[in-house]
Every structure is written in C-alpha cells, then in structure tokens.
Length: 342
Image 1 (cartoon, rainbow, N blue to C red):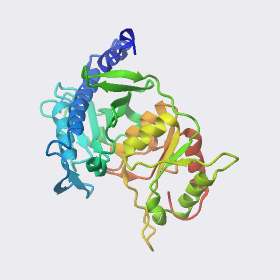
Image 2 (image 1 turned 135 degrees about the vertical axis):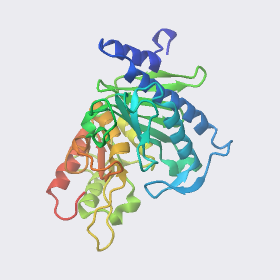
Image 3 (image 1 turned 90 degrees about the vertical axis):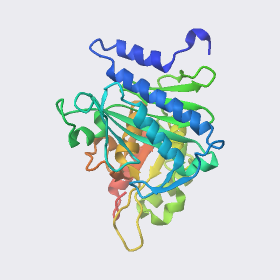
Image 4 (image 1 turned 180 degrees about the vertical axis):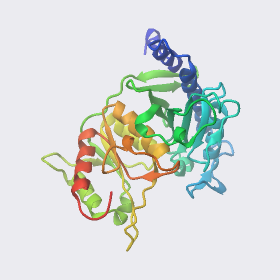
C-alpha cells in the first residue's frame, strides 16, 4: 500500500458523514469509539499469555456459560469507552442479563448499542482467533426514558453493524448500509487502515462450516443437508468442510472466500423442543446485516433473520448464513421437509 492510498477508519467514517449534510457527528463519533475500544481489546488479546488475563473467572454469564477473564475485560472496555460523548442512550451486552444504562445520556442519546464483547471465548486459552460483534440501532422512542421498543427492533432496522477479528492481524469490518469495508490494524502506527474496500461475498459457497459433533442432535432434514454438501448436489462438486468453532472466524473466512455456516437447533432424545444456541441480537442480526450488505443471505431456516421481531434481549435462533444460493437452498429444503423445525 502506497502512502498516497492510506485511508484510516477515522477518515473513512468522516468521508461517509460528509455525504449526509444533515449529520451532526454523533453516529460517526460512536463508530470511532467502537474502533478505539477494539484497539484496546486487541492489545490485551495479543498479550493475554503474558498477563493474568487467561482462564475463567469462576462465574457464569446470563447464558449459563463460564465467564472468561478476557470476556469480562472486553465487556468492561466496551461499556466504559463507548458512548461517553452522549451518542448512546443505552447499551446491552451478551454477557449481562439486563441493559447497561449510560449515565447522563439516557434522555438525549440517539443510538442503542448491542455487543458481544468477545465471541469464541472457549478458544481464548488455545490461541485461536476470536472477535467482537456489534450492532447499532437508532432509538425509536421520543427523547426521554429509554423503552423496551428501542432495544427489541428487527435486524432490518440496524443503522450499522460489524465485527472485529483478533487473529494473525486485527481487522475491523463494518457496514452502515452502504457496502462492507474492512480495516486492518497497523500496530506500528496504531491505526486501522482500509485494506478491504467494498467486500462482496461469492454467490456460491466453496466451504461449509458446522459442528458435526452435534449431528446426532440435529433434525433428519439438517443431517440430509449436510450430507448433500459433503457429497455434492445438482452436478456441483462437494463443498470443503472448514469449522473453527469461533463464529467470527468462521464467518470472516466464509465472507471472503464464499461459504455457508450452519448452526441449527439441537434436540434431545425423545424431546421435540428445539434448542437453538446463537443469540439473535448479539450475533445473528449484526452478522446477517453485514452479510446482506456484501451480497449474501442469512436465514433461520424459514425466512430472513433480519425480518424476525425480537421477543427478548437474549433470544436464541437457529442460524444459516453465507453465500446466497446455498442458504436459499437450505431454506427451501427445510421449508419443505417434514418433522422437526430447523
């Protein structure tokens, strides 16, 4: 990259703001705060093996999962750094049962921020890529106390969404509804620099990603789908199986290379109650918004993830997302199958 082509995330956000003369800068400031928080988290992720930040805290989060020290640290960084300039009226974290009030701006902030501070935390101790996922909504209630409706908006209403992946390099990928752009952190200057402009995901997958260790708990229709991906269908060659077990990592690879990710509901023997795992507000909605802006598609097996009306802050859903043709095939197959839901 030549010096003349260097574009920082701050200058990119500023240029985007210039296209909207009515903008007052609150939204741009919020994105810059998220990027700054990501730099702090990235620094500690890179040093996690050298400082006392690996391992579990001994507590459980609202999902009933063991809280990792780095999980808690990332949550605290996001909660303390973001929105201190009055842009955010309320925040919500995958790690906390209740929304997070923002002192001084509940009555005036225009935006709501939802985030998964550190996705893939079970991989922290073994040095596998992990990530931060975020979703930005514009409040729908008039200025004053924040209402439940400000939080529980369909994914289609997102104002922006994105993720940060902490891997061989740290990348910040986001959309504000006008394409998907990726920025790589240059540690020598401490800046996110534009490295992937206008990301477009392939229409057809070459990879499928799913945890086949759960195959015995899938519905028969899902098991048949995976077998078709492995053996090939409609004259197409088999898809390669690639599964990391860190949602952000699997999503990022599939976004760039062309792939489909499956996390269907699980079933217990003798029980037809579906048990989805992934969170609508913190994982499915923001990644679906990024994906659709890049030309992909995300579904719960019946219809678009982005059209679901949330019922609760920690609602879970089955998730199928990636290259459009393959996710449409999944959706069509599951719609016409009999028996258990996706």
